[in-house]
Length: 323
Image (tube, rainbow, N blue to C red):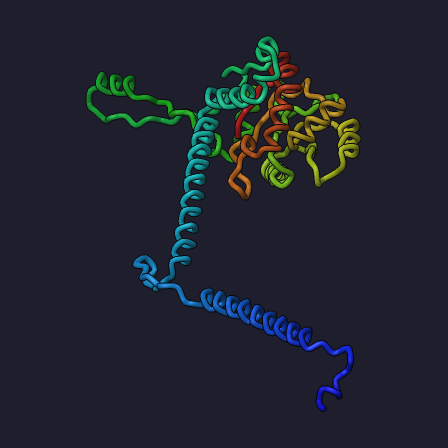
């Protein structure tokens, strides 16, 4: 009687199979959900903590690994910093050690940069000696003598007493005193040349910021008149070339890149330049000097190789100096 109410196309076996499939899918979903919940619970389970005597706190194993990793990074930074500081101190000591140290340092930089690309004869053309640099010394000071009654003893004490002091480092001299010292023996001193664009003194700085500082020092402490400002962020190269071609001045301050470009285009003439000063002991915000900042060092070495050393230091009366 109940069977008569069923449709002719009704299949009881198919209904049962579909029901079993739905139950299987639900059980599979439940198993996956249980695994996810278990995994989440395992992740949320607190790690076993250990006591860190250095910090006085309880920390987990992962925190200990992170702390140790941070310590190793700090140690590596300190090692690199100490190595860099030692190298920098050695460099400054050599540069401050008068003409001998300066010649050694600059020559080493030139050899490292060009030994693979230049022939022996070309390297000989940029070989520097102590005579190519200026030695700065303190003036002689009066030595104390023993006040003895015997005149002969006085003479002996005076003869045995060294009346000179060792060479001073250039960093101990103010810029004005330093320039006056190195220009004392220079031909024509700081008298402007009759030719335009021909300074008597060129100061090479590592950046435009430092060049501005040097220009201010020169104008406030010395009477140098016009200054050739040969660096970026001040004027374009074309404007600086126009200035050089239409003005006579005794001093120029600039960066290696801009000085090299102006020498190359003929605007800056160094045939009458008797002194070229490298502002090498000044440090930037990262404690790098003129010879340590990569881009500036590259431009400086190119300037030395292509213009200063072969064309002026070796062929004219130009001498170099380290400040």
